[in-house]
Image (cartoon, rainbow, N blue to C red; front, top):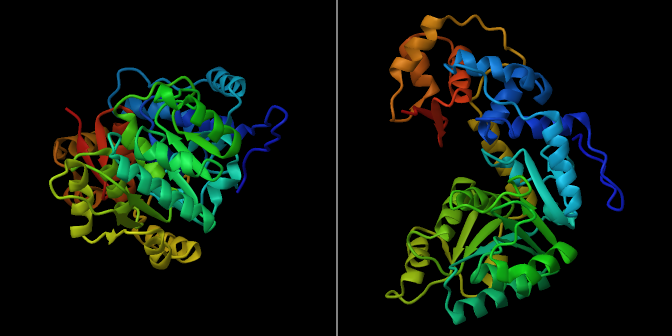
Length: 382
């Protein structure tokens, strides 16, 4: 993998490719899935940047989408430098080889601290309720300490409650994934913990420096927490908690789930009890994790095989010269609705080749007219 040269006592030497990757992911209407479809179509971030404006107009925009400029990218890098943080792209050898297997992995991460922790072969996510009970915090702390004693790295979200207990118990061997920019400490009472992790372990953020942690950012953050880990441990969680969202991401990512059982009438335990009913490992001690944990190499091989078999985005690399008629675009738009459908169904219905369907949908996505869903499905945005 090609990437950045990191010299931590000097300014990092970012490659042109890294600058282009940052510009593309920060451009209007470009999320992780769209980013990689653009890479597949155009072959590189640089080529994609040259074409996305035109593509968005073909998708129905009255004017091209806003492309993140080079000066804006350089400004973001300067802001990172001011807060002692660095940029990491999916092309860098330090990028997590487990995280890169999830279907919407972040092309760019910002970090502070020891980046070598990111590719540890023994990472366990531990999450739970913010308004947690004292017993659950004590148990989370105990589990974290015991796992670190066995050579594991913990990962959590630096939130109040369980997350805080986990990070404090493993402060030299932990990864904190935050929902805002790498410079935004939330909650504010974790300022000291934030600084200790930055000095001794690792802080990660997907959003640009200066971003505040909004409610919609937390689920986005949670997919990274589970994606970095061999397995996810849920200590306490209500039925509609962020911790259950993390557990659901872990299931989608083919990772194991461990859940701590709790008193049936406590709302904070209903989520974990449900996870156990649904097949999660019942967790009573760290031995339950260690004895049931799949090895890093075995999981990595399994994930790679799954990704290869499910990768049905069949557009050949660099095939951006397809003859597409406006009438074909209109036919596809008429068939779309708010109910998600597969690309294959659109191809069968329209008799258009899949590469044409993919390209039309990419144009529509850049124009902000469609949304992507799990299972390689799309729907129309009204």
